[in-house]
Image (tube, rainbow, N blue to C red; front, side, top):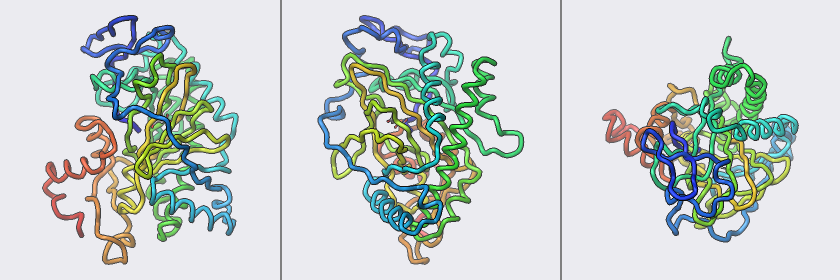
Length: 387
Ligand SMILES: O=C(O)CCC(=O)C(=O)O
């Protein structure tokens, strides 16, 4: 989950980027078609640009087999997940039970939304300080190393009584009644992702030796974030990135990438590309789960590249704890319960979210920087994480 709130959009006119009212620049994909050069704000330093890469052969975990209690599937799932999460925090799941039609509809709605005229998309424009809404290249927050993409993000809150259709309510409130159907598609998609996330939490619990229930229960009342990433074709893809290198601050990300390809993962000291595998979903461990596992599992460092010819879409569901819950590893993973020394202090998702929205552009060392920031800003955190 790359951070960024944007109330300004970046449109790329032929020569100079236009200035938005807030001093930022506008980005709008339809106006970029046929342009030869990208604006300098999108050019990334040479050292951070993509190069030719090896393919990462990611483990494919049979989630359905695990959830049905199949012994063989469980043994293999635990083995794959343990190895992958210790090494890089990245794996694929198959037999996840998400209906192909639902995925197709969710991608189709992205086409409908991002294909709208600029002023229509602006109706959902993200307000400063919030995570929800439409952004172009995160251009209001950042002046350089802008990502070549547009995004639409919204929340999927714990479905207690009366909140069952929060996603539909979001779409109709910002875009109008005509968007009810789109809201319903994303509502269903988020429900499916939440269900899968809880299954993966069971698997992670088993793989860490603390049983099925612990993490599942912790995330039952989660408040998650859904993001649709739209990457238009880019005239100079070798100079920029679609999503810069970062670890997701959330606990877990479930990503569907369309069949274009562009996702890359860092492991063994270099970047690897991850080709789309039909029927699978991509799972990333995020910073919050790294803390919940007391550092045993790696938050996955990843990025996305763009290409010259074809648009790319991805659907990212970020599982986040309820905002006010203490993020703390179970006792079995911490000394003296047989575990390791405590690696990170207690924090809440709200604190980490605010840190990435106000103080820090999410990157590969967000959790480390956040921990240091907590120590500097909250005297109660000075010693307690070594307990
Ligand atoms: O589009 C992708 O493949 C990655 C997206 C991503 O990393 C994000 O939205 O945080």
